[in-house]
Amino acid sequence: MIGTSTQSIGNNWAMGRNPFSKVTLGVGPINLTLGKGEKLLQWQNNLGNVVFNGLGLANLAMGGKMNFNEEHLSFNYYGGLLGKLHGMTNMGATGAYATWCETNLKFDTETYLHELGHIWQSRSENNFFLLNYFSSHIFGWGDSYYEQLAELFKFSIWGK
Image 1 (cartoon, rainbow, N blue to C red):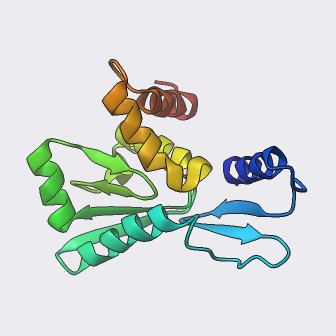
Image 2: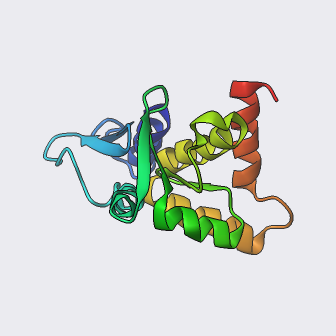
């Protein structure tokens, strides 16, 4: 909630509005918007959540499974078609708005915490996260800024 709320307060201030006129709060897998005349649930700050969690839920019909991490308020989807796609591309996991992976990451602490770092990044940047993430890979050298931040997040939680 801290990342999404401070971003929206900063955006309000930068646009010359009352800093608290429209405040977005990341609550679990969705973002809620508070403010006079605002709808609590809005598409524009939830597109990534809807797409990633929608594909994860559709994956359940294709033999996939899911669990919910109560500590970090994140959905984890694994197996099924998503697991096969990750297996073909040699990707262990993808973490943006939700975690997709080949297997249940609940027991792979190192990878899970890294991907959880991406989920927190997506919550703080809302719909700009994927654009910024892919841009940093296309235009950056070596590890992208977001990958380095995810590693720092993992280290700060796990210590390795």
